[in-house]
Length: 503
Image (cartoon, rainbow, N blue to C red; front, side, top):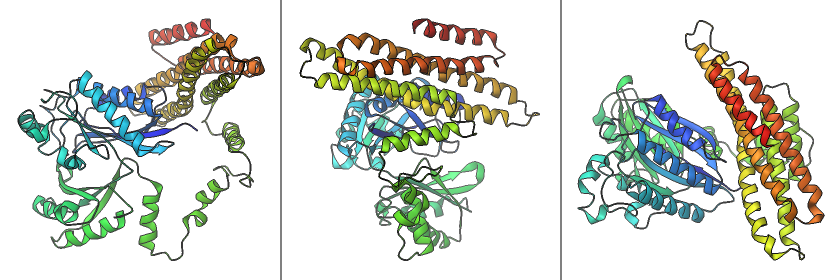
């Protein structure tokens, strides 16, 4: 099972859609990255991007985000309610699967060093990656924001970065890079614009003000809405839950004659955090979520969302195969041919990895072939991750087309949105075809090095990869046919022909 890291880079742009899309595209361009959420806020003038990827791909994508943010964002003209010190302000690595917190600390250190050396942006390690106790708290690292840090860095030894130059980047500022566990960003919106009240509530709510443990809180004025927002971060939602934060905030607000009218969750949060809220609110007795929540029970039994009669004893890979085939067989528009193409390519790469792995264990292996097979195994693993990610991206691109088609016919943006969605829906399977073709070429070149005992498996891998190319091509063509921009269509078709000739 592929190791996964979640990354949640926050960058200082929440109003310019083109800039936000460019930064997100930089992350998405790295093979193996799956975008989970993009949340922008005009008042904060900030974007919170969430994605998962294998560890090295995650680090590469975060660097791409930092570089693009540096290119596009100038903090000298940036204004927003959220504290910030950098164009890309903070980059946390969070363990998800097959990765430890210690692994995430190493990723943070390597990325901070690279940002400092290559982009010349001062980088600070925070939270679990902090090298000094004072920098465990992000608020302490960011104290003074861009303007304050600009005046102190290079003069105050305590503000010297962990990596990079001991001076502010003139436009991109500085960045905090760290490792942490899952947190919850929970905002509470009041029915008042009184910032003095908001300041008092936030101070008495946060841990540093003597309030709730493991809670950070800051008052923010939402000018367009005429409301004060108490923006909180629950750094350990098991110690202090959302329910407790809400109850405390309601009591403190009442003391100022104010009420909480709405709340917001920014970015992603663990299912358990919402479950805890429900259990506390309902004051449930003897509740066992592992048994009494339907989805949890089905997952424990190995039964997918579409049902089934598995008893949990069947191999996971077999249950996964049946889940995929059931999804493809449904009358829902996704997953479709594009996702099937990418899945076939991922299976081809995986089968190639098996053939190479067994060959490497063979006692009859020619030592001269070992480096070739080891490099091939690593490369095939990266190709598998890329194609696996494209399986989901194809479905996402079709969803974008569906959203454009759902616009009312009198919407002036409908035609342009449909054309943009068609171009994106052609681009994804084209990337699938190209990735599968490259993997096919690599596997074919390695055929003489694999053991004869697995030669048939490698041949099967080649057949699957070729099928992935041909299947993806069908999806490229159908979407190209709907493009009005014939120059764009011709360029996409030329790229596709290059891939097909190579296979």
